[in-house]
Image 1 (tube, rainbow, N blue to C red):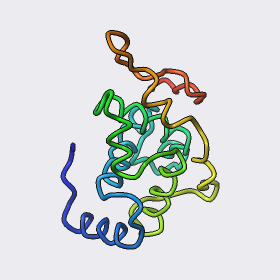
Image 2 (cartoon, rainbow, N blue to C red):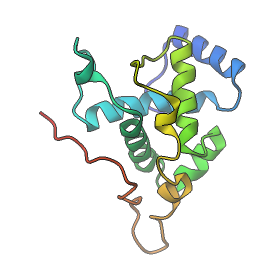
Image 3 (cartoon, rainbow, N blue to C red):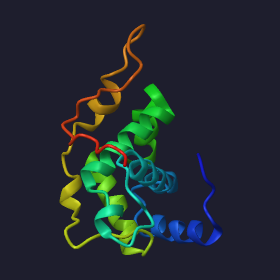
Length: 151
């Protein structure tokens, strides 16, 4: 995977996994990577004082998550995510809110687990774009809002 986690963060993630064993530590690590990817994708400013300049919505995070999974794992994305316990968009929300609960990620008052429920057909988003001898890109239309242009 990309970045190595600092020891205190890894220990805290291990505590999260012990409390909720539905998802592997790799799933949590990937959510951090997906958040970084999404922030860049939507032209956000992670160190801004203004919340609206740094915050991404659940739908945006799911878009960045899907794109990063397809970039990193290609046709194996569904298999990798399944191994980690991530089998639907709601699982991404569960992971995010586990991180929030343990002080490892922030949220706004308007953020909710419901923001992650049934956003797209998970298996189709990672499987349908791959055909032998054909397109090796994932599906582009999963009913997400258009990406905001970078400033």
